[in-house]
Image 1: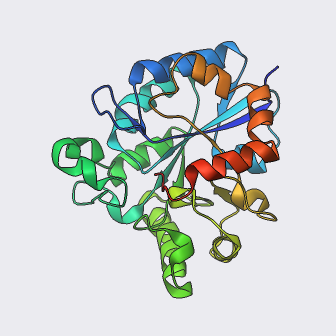
Image 2: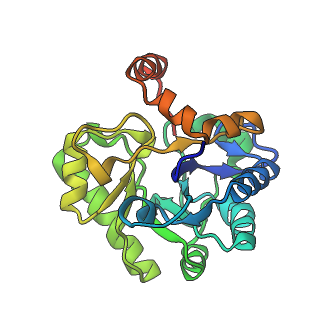
Length: 256
């Protein structure tokens, strides 16, 4: 039995980069093919969260706006006629931007090429192909630790950057590191967002502004992806006892 609606969280797409967040292009191809065979069709994150799409739908989201997403994921999704969503840290866009935030520093010297961001022209191209361009803040900070003023700058400023540079309305945000609490949700709502993407357990009362996603990484090929994307898996992962175990595993560790 499969769920009617799946929201997946990806980052980079690369054969060479050994990072846990870099899915191999061939694995992405196989994952999309599996979803297609199961009767899914692609939608944007906001459509999956706020809309009423019929049938089985999957929202593929890509955090950080890696250039490799434009190079590898865009053609694969285009072949299926599916849109996706890319969440952009707006101060990191283009060749002058830097993805040197916590978790990435160890890759900068040997794998800096994999940390290249799309530019605004690539993002605008995706928008013309039906992709949703959402915010991933301006500088990819740990939002719960920010002052109210800094939190507002990150959330409001990134939304304004996207709307100015791409010329479309920005209504969704993905919280860096999946880190979100009630104060961040309130700030996102005040900044004008209607949909928010997390990666860890949701926040009580967060609703559409704290939607969980299934994270897909380099180790999730083959049967692991099939297991993750089945309804029984989602029920198991949502069980309170399993959530407590997962919280213990993640304690003290920040993920991208």
